Length: 446
Image 1 (tube, rainbow, N blue to C red):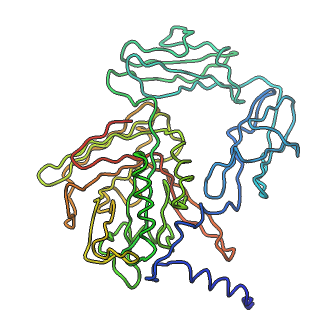
Image 2: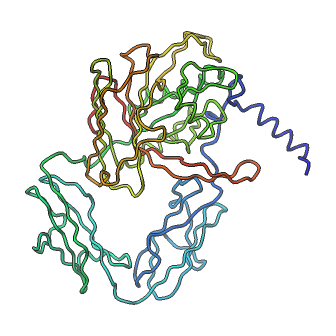
């Protein structure tokens, strides 16, 4: 079937204003571009589908890019609009759906019975504790009902009514709950005299700028990243330099060349906000501020030193709560205030153009090193030590080196392109939190 003339014109205009890797004239889909991929489908989920009468069930709505849309969605039970969480007060089967804008979710059938529970679970707010800390616990039945106040909880064989329960000595504490003739599994908490993770962290943002010396539209993006960081110490930037098909960027490294293809970066500049699924509509700060306003479920502390011309690094990741997915550690070395013999297109400064926070080296796998789930419990600290790391030979000024470390998740993303074709890219990610320190310095948890 032939493409209509009007559609051809639209496509030509679109291609003319977009800066691709094979086009040295610059351009891009950063400033003035999309605030993220459009929502083309939504998925409804819940932890339980079989409940007892008078149970409250919490539902979650996520878009095709894994964004949480629960607070913006409408929930319906058998076609009647209701609020979330949903209370089921009578027996029967109930069909629940969610709606977001003009999209409808999948259907979930909730079965409600008037029957006694068959099992209970004892949960804690954290996993790791030290002397003086207090553990808050919760007892739930298999229908999801909270029965903490009706349950009897024992610690090392002695009944306790203290919730939170405070630890005064080190050692292992065995907790067991009983309710309505049911007994939970034994939960063992280890209490140490050492350091545990703080109870709260500051949320930070990483702006990842895909750029090139050949791109005439890239300087405004770089300036926007710099201005954002200058205006808020919790915002960090890093420049991913990539070459085009006809122009070599001398600051390109294997990782940035890999990522520009892997994450389908077709337009330059493209600036991501805490992961490649949110494209920054710079210089507006709405997307950045939304990330800063989120609760930080983990934080990072760094210690760095140059010993014998090599980099030593200790990374500590503190977990406020236990993530319910695999998380990975990324460690970067960046150099600030870099100039190069290749002039920057789109700038009158030419070879005197100053490039900020240029990514020089990646000390983890290109897609991150997995943090073992045994080290990600709430209150725990995961420590990773790097010694004798080689420094790149192209560093201009050792005093301008920074270490940037972040923790991210990973997931498969499905999207529909302009022509209606469905693609699956794997993996994409969201950044939990990020930390930065100049080489030779330290940064405590904050």
